Length: 396
Image (cartoon, rainbow, N blue to C red; front, side, top):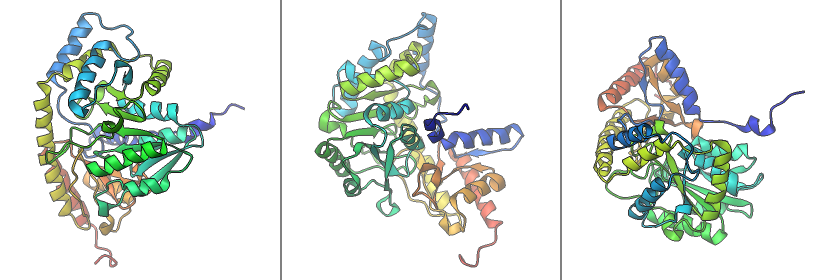
């Protein structure tokens, strides 16, 4: 009898895309929806990137490329890494690949079935999907709102066993927007060295921070030569989500195996896309990125202020990324119920906390990747929806 592979039953994917598909179907039927559900910046991609990609297309850069990434982009990324992280990787330490795929490539190449990966909870859902798919075990470290959802290094230490193969860090963090302190990042990096395990540092939101501080990277400890793998992308910082262009910097032996797996799955990233990446790294783009972050901060402040004015909702001010993770337990609804209510009664799409982990019930995630006026409109709709519901005696 035909059947799927056992591993196929462990695939979970990204729940935000299921919600997006539902929302888009409602929109096709004529419903007006405010989008707080998916982290896709609404800015245009940089002109330098677009022009570079167009030139590449017109000049015939439409054939196979080096599976590691074209040399020109890897050289540009090496210079970028020196400016950004203070490290100068070899070209063989850099792999050009969609950032979401890097999660799977790293886990597949350094973790065996039955071994353990330490992850924050809540977390980006791809971590858990990839871990479960290969038959490994996620070891969850709950993120406490009392610590501003910042990963506790001592809680990580308590969970390391002889089966631990990888620790995943994500700062600034999706879904909470928290930013780890430099000391905490250094402590986790030291733990990885002490226990001789790999460390995947998801730094996709590194550029999206508020208050002027630059997030600490564990790469400063080993230059990504021994155990640290940096995951980064053009999607969030440069509003290039549809380009599917990212890169990993890591130990040469790990990058070599990741490259072989990339060859097996997708062969290479289209070269014209990669030339667009070179354009995006133009020094002139830095001010553009800074301008985006200033706008995100205005949106964050409008979102946090508005949510804290809703009955039964409490929202902390995040230090980075473009997400808020409010506590909605005071409304009397569970996370899924609240999200469904907001979609049906307010025309507002957002995500239940448990989409991001077992320890996120009572919370929801909202993205502020739309203009302030739209954010205020969405908050007003949520306000009206909640006002129409009688207050539960238990909450009055």
